[in-house]
Image (tube, rainbow, N blue to C red; front, top):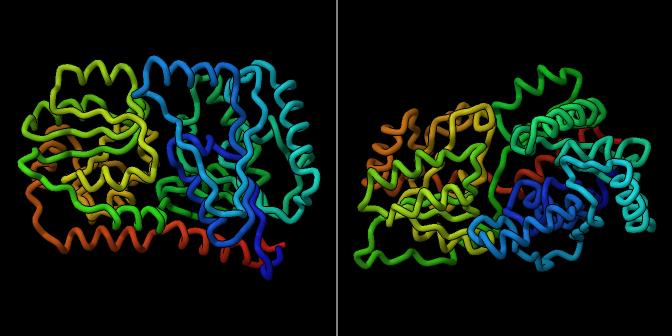
Length: 394
Protein backbone atom coordinates (compact mmCIF):
# COMPACT_ATOMS: atom_id res chain seq x y z
CA UNK A 1 0.00 0.00 0.00
CA UNK A 2 1.38 3.37 -1.00
CA UNK A 3 2.11 5.92 1.70
CA UNK A 4 2.88 8.95 -0.47
CA UNK A 5 -0.76 9.93 -1.02
CA UNK A 6 -4.00 10.18 0.89
CA UNK A 7 -5.79 6.91 1.56
CA UNK A 8 -9.31 6.07 0.49
CA UNK A 9 -11.43 4.57 3.29
CA UNK A 10 -14.64 2.69 2.63
CA UNK A 11 -16.64 2.21 5.84
CA UNK A 12 -19.44 -0.35 6.05
CA UNK A 13 -21.22 1.02 9.08
CA UNK A 14 -22.84 -0.35 12.17
CA UNK A 15 -25.54 2.32 12.09
CA UNK A 16 -26.10 5.70 10.44
CA UNK A 17 -24.80 9.22 10.81
CA UNK A 18 -28.22 10.27 12.12
CA UNK A 19 -28.02 8.05 15.19
CA UNK A 20 -26.24 8.27 18.51
CA UNK A 21 -22.52 9.01 18.06
CA UNK A 22 -20.45 5.85 17.95
CA UNK A 23 -16.91 4.74 17.29
CA UNK A 24 -17.44 4.27 13.55
CA UNK A 25 -18.57 7.85 12.97
CA UNK A 26 -15.67 9.19 15.01
CA UNK A 27 -13.12 7.17 13.03
CA UNK A 28 -14.64 8.21 9.71
CA UNK A 29 -14.75 11.89 10.69
CA UNK A 30 -11.15 11.86 11.89
CA UNK A 31 -9.91 10.15 8.73
CA UNK A 32 -11.63 12.88 6.71
CA UNK A 33 -10.35 15.64 8.97
CA UNK A 34 -6.81 14.42 8.37
CA UNK A 35 -7.36 14.76 4.63
CA UNK A 36 -8.13 11.18 3.62
CA UNK A 37 -11.03 10.30 1.33
CA UNK A 38 -13.88 8.60 3.16
CA UNK A 39 -17.02 6.94 1.82
CA UNK A 40 -19.27 5.88 4.69
CA UNK A 41 -22.04 3.41 3.83
CA UNK A 42 -24.83 3.39 6.38
CA UNK A 43 -26.75 0.24 7.24
CA UNK A 44 -29.53 -0.12 4.72
CA UNK A 45 -32.87 1.06 6.13
CA UNK A 46 -35.91 -1.19 6.01
CA UNK A 47 -39.63 -0.58 5.71
CA UNK A 48 -40.19 -1.81 9.27
CA UNK A 49 -37.30 0.27 10.58
CA UNK A 50 -38.64 3.45 9.02
CA UNK A 51 -42.09 2.80 10.49
CA UNK A 52 -40.57 2.16 13.92
CA UNK A 53 -38.60 5.42 13.79
CA UNK A 54 -41.72 7.33 12.76
CA UNK A 55 -43.70 5.74 15.60
CA UNK A 56 -41.06 6.80 18.13
CA UNK A 57 -41.05 10.37 16.85
CA UNK A 58 -44.83 10.59 17.10
CA UNK A 59 -45.69 8.54 20.18
CA UNK A 60 -42.50 7.99 22.20
CA UNK A 61 -40.18 10.93 21.52
CA UNK A 62 -37.95 10.20 24.52
CA UNK A 63 -37.06 6.78 23.09
CA UNK A 64 -36.00 7.95 19.62
CA UNK A 65 -32.34 7.34 18.90
CA UNK A 66 -31.82 9.39 15.78
CA UNK A 67 -32.53 12.84 14.43
CA UNK A 68 -29.14 14.48 14.07
CA UNK A 69 -28.44 15.73 10.55
CA UNK A 70 -24.79 15.74 9.55
CA UNK A 71 -23.75 18.96 7.87
CA UNK A 72 -20.66 18.51 5.76
CA UNK A 73 -17.54 19.79 7.49
CA UNK A 74 -14.99 17.94 5.40
CA UNK A 75 -15.20 17.78 1.60
CA UNK A 76 -13.52 14.37 1.56
CA UNK A 77 -16.30 12.71 3.60
CA UNK A 78 -19.26 11.29 1.70
CA UNK A 79 -22.15 9.57 3.47
CA UNK A 80 -24.23 7.06 1.51
CA UNK A 81 -27.61 5.59 2.39
CA UNK A 82 -28.40 2.36 0.50
CA UNK A 83 -31.90 1.71 -0.83
CA UNK A 84 -34.62 0.68 1.61
CA UNK A 85 -34.84 -3.11 2.02
CA UNK A 86 -38.08 -5.08 2.23
CA UNK A 87 -37.18 -6.46 5.68
CA UNK A 88 -34.65 -5.66 8.41
CA UNK A 89 -30.89 -5.67 7.86
CA UNK A 90 -30.28 -7.96 10.85
CA UNK A 91 -33.15 -10.40 10.39
CA UNK A 92 -33.72 -10.30 6.65
CA UNK A 93 -36.45 -12.54 5.25
CA UNK A 94 -35.41 -11.77 1.66
CA UNK A 95 -31.59 -12.08 1.57
CA UNK A 96 -31.33 -12.62 -2.19
CA UNK A 97 -33.45 -9.56 -2.92
CA UNK A 98 -31.56 -7.49 -0.36
CA UNK A 99 -28.22 -8.46 -1.86
CA UNK A 100 -29.36 -7.71 -5.40
CA UNK A 101 -30.78 -4.31 -4.44
CA UNK A 102 -27.66 -3.34 -2.55
CA UNK A 103 -25.18 -4.51 -5.17
CA UNK A 104 -27.00 -2.77 -8.00
CA UNK A 105 -26.99 0.46 -5.95
CA UNK A 106 -23.33 0.01 -4.93
CA UNK A 107 -22.13 -0.62 -8.49
CA UNK A 108 -24.00 2.46 -9.71
CA UNK A 109 -22.66 4.62 -6.87
CA UNK A 110 -19.02 3.60 -7.29
CA UNK A 111 -18.89 2.86 -11.01
CA UNK A 112 -16.36 5.66 -11.54
CA UNK A 113 -14.19 4.65 -8.57
CA UNK A 114 -11.36 2.11 -8.57
CA UNK A 115 -11.60 0.49 -5.12
CA UNK A 116 -8.56 -1.76 -5.46
CA UNK A 117 -6.44 0.74 -3.51
CA UNK A 118 -9.03 1.26 -0.76
CA UNK A 119 -9.00 0.41 2.93
CA UNK A 120 -12.31 -1.30 3.68
CA UNK A 121 -13.48 -1.01 7.29
CA UNK A 122 -16.30 -3.44 8.15
CA UNK A 123 -17.95 -2.50 11.44
CA UNK A 124 -20.83 -5.01 11.39
CA UNK A 125 -20.21 -8.69 10.50
CA UNK A 126 -23.56 -9.10 8.74
CA UNK A 127 -22.22 -7.13 5.79
CA UNK A 128 -19.86 -10.01 5.02
CA UNK A 129 -21.29 -12.83 2.96
CA UNK A 130 -24.71 -11.17 2.73
CA UNK A 131 -23.91 -7.97 0.84
CA UNK A 132 -20.17 -8.02 0.16
CA UNK A 133 -17.37 -10.58 -0.06
CA UNK A 134 -13.96 -11.02 -1.66
CA UNK A 135 -15.50 -11.88 -5.02
CA UNK A 136 -17.52 -8.67 -5.04
CA UNK A 137 -14.93 -6.35 -3.52
CA UNK A 138 -11.13 -6.64 -3.67
CA UNK A 139 -9.66 -3.85 -1.55
CA UNK A 140 -6.01 -3.23 -0.79
CA UNK A 141 -6.74 -3.86 2.89
CA UNK A 142 -9.73 -5.45 4.61
CA UNK A 143 -10.17 -4.50 8.28
CA UNK A 144 -12.76 -5.90 10.66
CA UNK A 145 -13.32 -3.49 13.55
CA UNK A 146 -14.87 -4.94 16.71
CA UNK A 147 -16.44 -2.30 18.93
CA UNK A 148 -18.71 -4.36 21.21
CA UNK A 149 -19.98 -7.83 21.97
CA UNK A 150 -22.08 -9.35 19.18
CA UNK A 151 -24.96 -9.56 21.66
CA UNK A 152 -25.26 -5.76 21.47
CA UNK A 153 -25.97 -5.99 17.73
CA UNK A 154 -28.35 -8.97 17.97
CA UNK A 155 -32.08 -8.58 18.44
CA UNK A 156 -32.85 -12.30 18.61
CA UNK A 157 -31.13 -15.65 19.06
CA UNK A 158 -31.41 -16.23 15.33
CA UNK A 159 -29.71 -12.91 14.55
CA UNK A 160 -26.94 -13.68 17.02
CA UNK A 161 -26.32 -17.02 15.32
CA UNK A 162 -26.10 -15.28 11.92
CA UNK A 163 -23.74 -12.68 13.34
CA UNK A 164 -21.41 -15.34 14.73
CA UNK A 165 -21.33 -17.18 11.40
CA UNK A 166 -20.58 -13.99 9.49
CA UNK A 167 -17.95 -12.93 12.01
CA UNK A 168 -16.05 -16.19 11.68
CA UNK A 169 -15.95 -15.79 7.91
CA UNK A 170 -14.99 -12.11 8.06
CA UNK A 171 -12.32 -12.56 10.71
CA UNK A 172 -10.72 -15.42 8.76
CA UNK A 173 -10.51 -13.31 5.59
CA UNK A 174 -9.65 -9.91 7.07
CA UNK A 175 -6.10 -8.64 6.75
CA UNK A 176 -6.37 -7.02 10.16
CA UNK A 177 -8.74 -7.13 13.14
CA UNK A 178 -8.98 -4.00 15.25
CA UNK A 179 -10.73 -3.95 18.61
CA UNK A 180 -11.83 -1.39 21.18
CA UNK A 181 -11.33 -3.00 24.61
CA UNK A 182 -8.36 -4.61 26.31
CA UNK A 183 -10.56 -7.42 27.60
CA UNK A 184 -11.33 -8.43 24.00
CA UNK A 185 -7.74 -9.36 23.26
CA UNK A 186 -7.67 -12.82 24.86
CA UNK A 187 -10.99 -13.71 23.21
CA UNK A 188 -9.73 -12.65 19.77
CA UNK A 189 -6.39 -14.43 20.15
CA UNK A 190 -8.17 -17.60 21.19
CA UNK A 191 -10.84 -17.49 18.47
CA UNK A 192 -8.60 -16.28 15.62
CA UNK A 193 -5.01 -17.21 16.48
CA UNK A 194 -3.82 -16.77 12.87
CA UNK A 195 -5.22 -13.25 12.49
CA UNK A 196 -3.35 -10.03 13.03
CA UNK A 197 -5.08 -7.96 15.72
CA UNK A 198 -4.49 -4.40 16.83
CA UNK A 199 -5.90 -2.58 19.87
CA UNK A 200 -7.56 0.75 19.06
CA UNK A 201 -9.34 1.90 22.22
CA UNK A 202 -12.09 4.47 22.06
CA UNK A 203 -11.27 8.14 22.38
CA UNK A 204 -12.65 11.66 22.12
CA UNK A 205 -12.39 14.21 19.32
CA UNK A 206 -10.54 17.49 19.59
CA UNK A 207 -13.72 19.11 18.32
CA UNK A 208 -15.64 17.78 21.32
CA UNK A 209 -12.92 19.03 23.67
CA UNK A 210 -13.28 22.47 22.09
CA UNK A 211 -17.08 22.33 22.54
CA UNK A 212 -16.67 21.61 26.25
CA UNK A 213 -14.07 24.35 26.65
CA UNK A 214 -16.46 26.78 24.99
CA UNK A 215 -19.24 26.09 27.49
CA UNK A 216 -19.26 28.03 30.78
CA UNK A 217 -19.77 26.16 34.01
CA UNK A 218 -23.39 26.24 35.11
CA UNK A 219 -24.13 28.47 38.06
CA UNK A 220 -25.62 26.57 40.98
CA UNK A 221 -27.77 29.43 42.34
CA UNK A 222 -29.10 27.17 45.06
CA UNK A 223 -29.89 24.34 42.66
CA UNK A 224 -29.32 20.76 43.89
CA UNK A 225 -26.21 18.83 42.79
CA UNK A 226 -26.60 16.99 39.50
CA UNK A 227 -25.67 13.34 38.94
CA UNK A 228 -25.46 12.89 35.18
CA UNK A 229 -25.57 10.01 32.72
CA UNK A 230 -25.09 10.29 28.96
CA UNK A 231 -26.20 7.34 26.85
CA UNK A 232 -29.04 4.99 26.08
CA UNK A 233 -31.07 3.19 28.73
CA UNK A 234 -30.90 -0.11 26.83
CA UNK A 235 -31.51 -3.12 29.03
CA UNK A 236 -28.49 -4.94 27.60
CA UNK A 237 -25.97 -2.87 29.54
CA UNK A 238 -27.82 -0.15 31.44
CA UNK A 239 -28.72 -0.99 35.05
CA UNK A 240 -32.07 0.76 35.43
CA UNK A 241 -32.58 -0.52 38.98
CA UNK A 242 -29.25 0.94 40.02
CA UNK A 243 -30.13 4.39 38.68
CA UNK A 244 -33.55 4.31 40.32
CA UNK A 245 -31.90 3.30 43.60
CA UNK A 246 -29.53 6.26 43.31
CA UNK A 247 -32.44 8.64 42.82
CA UNK A 248 -34.26 7.21 45.85
CA UNK A 249 -31.17 7.25 48.09
CA UNK A 250 -30.15 10.80 47.12
CA UNK A 251 -33.38 12.84 46.96
CA UNK A 252 -31.35 16.00 47.52
CA UNK A 253 -29.71 15.50 44.08
CA UNK A 254 -31.02 15.69 40.52
CA UNK A 255 -30.38 12.62 38.39
CA UNK A 256 -30.09 13.77 34.76
CA UNK A 257 -30.44 11.16 31.99
CA UNK A 258 -29.30 12.45 28.59
CA UNK A 259 -30.06 10.08 25.73
CA UNK A 260 -32.80 7.77 24.42
CA UNK A 261 -35.05 6.46 27.18
CA UNK A 262 -37.14 3.34 26.73
CA UNK A 263 -40.78 3.36 27.75
CA UNK A 264 -40.41 0.98 30.70
CA UNK A 265 -37.73 3.14 32.33
CA UNK A 266 -39.85 6.25 31.70
CA UNK A 267 -42.74 4.63 33.59
CA UNK A 268 -40.49 3.81 36.55
CA UNK A 269 -39.29 7.42 36.70
CA UNK A 270 -42.76 8.92 37.03
CA UNK A 271 -42.79 8.45 40.80
CA UNK A 272 -39.37 10.10 41.27
CA UNK A 273 -39.42 13.88 41.00
CA UNK A 274 -35.61 14.19 41.05
CA UNK A 275 -35.03 12.37 37.75
CA UNK A 276 -34.75 14.49 34.57
CA UNK A 277 -35.22 12.73 31.22
CA UNK A 278 -33.81 14.70 28.29
CA UNK A 279 -34.09 12.15 25.49
CA UNK A 280 -31.94 12.31 22.37
CA UNK A 281 -29.44 15.21 22.31
CA UNK A 282 -27.18 15.92 19.31
CA UNK A 283 -23.53 15.24 20.08
CA UNK A 284 -22.46 18.87 19.80
CA UNK A 285 -25.00 19.78 22.51
CA UNK A 286 -23.59 17.28 25.02
CA UNK A 287 -20.92 19.75 26.12
CA UNK A 288 -23.53 22.01 27.70
CA UNK A 289 -25.01 19.00 29.50
CA UNK A 290 -21.62 17.99 30.89
CA UNK A 291 -21.13 21.46 32.33
CA UNK A 292 -24.31 20.95 34.38
CA UNK A 293 -23.05 17.75 36.02
CA UNK A 294 -21.34 17.56 39.39
CA UNK A 295 -20.75 13.80 39.13
CA UNK A 296 -21.03 11.54 36.08
CA UNK A 297 -22.02 7.88 36.28
CA UNK A 298 -21.52 4.69 34.28
CA UNK A 299 -24.27 2.43 35.68
CA UNK A 300 -23.51 -0.77 33.81
CA UNK A 301 -25.01 -4.15 34.44
CA UNK A 302 -22.49 -6.81 35.37
CA UNK A 303 -22.60 -9.20 32.41
CA UNK A 304 -20.64 -10.58 29.47
CA UNK A 305 -21.53 -7.57 27.32
CA UNK A 306 -20.16 -4.95 29.73
CA UNK A 307 -17.06 -7.05 30.44
CA UNK A 308 -15.67 -5.94 27.08
CA UNK A 309 -17.14 -2.44 26.74
CA UNK A 310 -14.69 0.46 26.54
CA UNK A 311 -17.28 3.24 26.93
CA UNK A 312 -17.06 6.42 24.89
CA UNK A 313 -18.61 8.26 27.83
CA UNK A 314 -15.48 7.59 29.90
CA UNK A 315 -13.52 9.88 27.58
CA UNK A 316 -16.28 12.46 27.21
CA UNK A 317 -16.82 12.75 30.96
CA UNK A 318 -13.07 13.10 31.42
CA UNK A 319 -12.89 16.13 29.11
CA UNK A 320 -14.85 18.08 31.74
CA UNK A 321 -12.69 16.69 34.57
CA UNK A 322 -15.78 15.27 36.25
CA UNK A 323 -15.65 12.72 39.08
CA UNK A 324 -16.89 9.48 37.51
CA UNK A 325 -18.62 6.72 39.46
CA UNK A 326 -18.83 3.40 37.61
CA UNK A 327 -19.94 -0.16 38.18
CA UNK A 328 -16.76 -2.21 38.24
CA UNK A 329 -16.23 -4.29 35.11
CA UNK A 330 -13.14 -6.11 33.93
CA UNK A 331 -12.56 -3.46 31.26
CA UNK A 332 -13.13 -0.43 33.49
CA UNK A 333 -10.80 -1.89 36.12
CA UNK A 334 -7.96 -0.93 33.75
CA UNK A 335 -8.92 2.72 34.37
CA UNK A 336 -9.28 2.49 38.13
CA UNK A 337 -7.07 5.53 38.70
CA UNK A 338 -9.63 7.75 36.99
CA UNK A 339 -12.81 6.31 38.49
CA UNK A 340 -14.72 5.64 41.66
CA UNK A 341 -15.46 1.93 41.11
CA UNK A 342 -18.20 0.03 42.92
CA UNK A 343 -19.12 -3.66 43.00
CA UNK A 344 -22.54 -3.32 44.63
CA UNK A 345 -25.52 -1.01 44.58
CA UNK A 346 -24.79 0.18 48.12
CA UNK A 347 -21.16 0.89 47.28
CA UNK A 348 -22.17 2.72 44.10
CA UNK A 349 -24.34 5.10 46.10
CA UNK A 350 -21.66 5.66 48.75
CA UNK A 351 -19.08 6.36 46.02
CA UNK A 352 -21.40 9.00 44.55
CA UNK A 353 -21.59 10.65 47.94
CA UNK A 354 -17.80 10.58 48.15
CA UNK A 355 -17.45 11.96 44.63
CA UNK A 356 -19.84 14.83 45.44
CA UNK A 357 -17.49 15.83 48.25
CA UNK A 358 -14.40 15.71 46.04
CA UNK A 359 -12.43 18.94 46.20
CA UNK A 360 -9.12 18.15 44.55
CA UNK A 361 -8.25 20.13 41.39
CA UNK A 362 -5.39 17.69 40.70
CA UNK A 363 -7.86 14.85 40.12
CA UNK A 364 -9.84 16.95 37.66
CA UNK A 365 -6.60 17.81 35.84
CA UNK A 366 -5.62 14.14 35.65
CA UNK A 367 -8.93 13.28 34.01
CA UNK A 368 -8.63 16.15 31.57
CA UNK A 369 -5.08 15.09 30.65
CA UNK A 370 -6.34 11.55 30.09
CA UNK A 371 -8.87 12.89 27.56
CA UNK A 372 -6.28 15.06 25.82
CA UNK A 373 -3.93 12.09 25.48
CA UNK A 374 -6.66 9.86 24.06
CA UNK A 375 -7.99 11.60 20.97
CA UNK A 376 -9.32 10.15 17.74
CA UNK A 377 -6.58 12.01 15.91
CA UNK A 378 -3.99 10.02 17.80
CA UNK A 379 -5.87 6.77 17.22
CA UNK A 380 -6.05 7.27 13.45
CA UNK A 381 -2.42 8.34 13.16
CA UNK A 382 -1.34 5.25 15.10
CA UNK A 383 -3.53 3.08 12.87
CA UNK A 384 -1.99 4.54 9.71
CA UNK A 385 1.49 3.81 11.04
CA UNK A 386 0.39 0.26 11.78
CA UNK A 387 -0.87 -0.45 8.27
CA UNK A 388 2.31 0.89 6.74
CA UNK A 389 4.29 -1.95 8.34
CA UNK A 390 5.72 -4.41 5.78
CA UNK A 391 3.51 -7.33 6.83
CA UNK A 392 0.35 -5.37 6.02
CA UNK A 393 1.53 -2.94 3.37
CA UNK A 394 0.70 -3.96 -0.15
